[in-house]
Length: 426
RNA sequence: GUGAGCGUAGCUCAGCUGGUUAGAGCACCGGUCUGUGGAACCGGGGGUCGUGGGUUCAAAUCCCAUCGCUCACCCCA
Image (cartoon, rainbow, N blue to C red):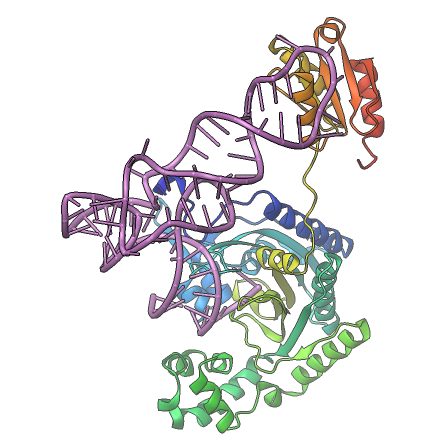
């Protein structure tokens, strides 16, 4: 296909079922999140690169190799957002949201960009809906965040999900743990995969997440203990409290001691929600607590917790479970002229029904049989016919396609009839 | 970024031991059928066979490259 008639690799156009799935997900998310007190925040899709370098973390895969970064005309480094939290926190600081009643609950939705190799459930431009609770370090906030993401997915009809939860402790815990990993793994440096050799220097925690057989074998052989066993009193208590809260709320989970987030800002609770019917890209969403992110970006310290759901992933999960998207909109009435000279009258009729009534009309002349067939095909309940008689008297013949009854009405009476019916499903 | 598989009409696919003008179903448009439909039948538009190069008298078919998609690695949404 020609270059100009092809979307860029890893991007695609959303329409039909696909966009109606996304619309349904967003509609449910919005209802749940706003009922819980969140307001919507739309941040720009690009930010100064530093927002992500500092916010997401210099050593992360996202920052090191997945960002779309370019210079603007003034030579400043700009990056297309690879995730939503850093921008939300930047806005939180910029607009002094710490003076709002705390904690502040924010939800957002929109496209994100990562230069990864595309595969099913992983695009270079993808879409997320996310939620942040900023200004509370309570374990209850963690539970609320998890609960809401779970409820949103459940309300869509999804059942085959698994919540995996873990804790990455606080910075002190991780420092101690990194020392431990270094002491245990350095003697076996040569046995690690090359990726993990690099990680041992930059970010030892990530070695636990490795799927390289040699790494898995080595970790097992050395009986490497999980971070959970190195957590201090405070971290352990927070984690236990979150788990207890989930049990009280009736949310099943499995503990994943290996969970390591790809974003540096996380502390304490971290989780992912996976779907059993998806392939290797099975995480519908993930989130965690970030207690130092606000100050890292230059604000007064404020703890937070948040998550994001991937709209494409959730769509795949819904399709895998046989769930439906929002219905395509159908006209209540389809109007057609019997001769080309009456097409303008058809528009006149349609606009007298808009916007309360969904009315489509034909721009070209249709014989009655043809017009009725088209009305039926479009899923209309009524057909509107405009011929010589109707055009002369500002009227329209309305035919109910189910009962086959029809009557000649003035446009005004027709509008009243249709608007009265509009609330009923057809 | 690494490895493997696959690219023919808007969609699903046939054609591939090279051989007239590249096909089917669905969809779309029109007709049979000029004031009353859902059927049936008939017809039409739409393709540089992903792209570029090579081999050959001849390439959708064989070879190479490239782009894209898919799956896995990786990473996570």
